[in-house]
Image (cartoon, rainbow, N blue to C red; front, side, top):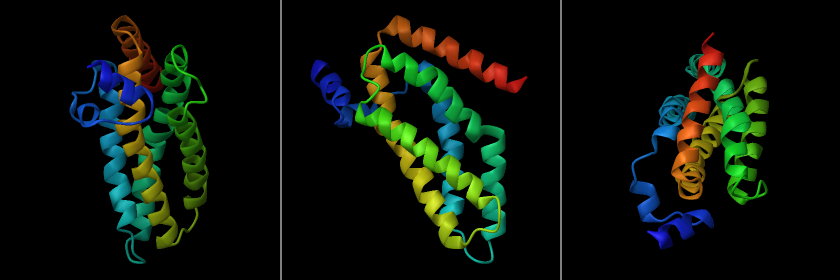
Length: 165
């Protein structure tokens, strides 16, 4: 077990890290990731005939869930990790960089995007979600003590409730 935690904490996911059940603290974010993967798949399949529908599906997801998901990760999740891990850890830097790029792309696709632009957004969203699920979340689960994971779960739930109001 210690070896698996070491590999996760040092940016090398192990088979162990990929097959462990997600902690309760991160379960809601993982469910939201599933929704994001569905939208990413739709973007990846965009053609000239389906571009408007793919764009609308993404913008609906972004407005209802995606942008708030990013905010919660940046305001609650990453600061919790930063108590135990450098904020310049590659996994953290990638998440923040991805968020900025995806936000920029969300603004760009609100107009009349080409299928190539939609597919590029779909690729980026898919890769981002996979990074969080395979690298960031296992890092958090390996790094935060159980009592801090429990505290994180409450903080994430409260952030979601604030958004739902």
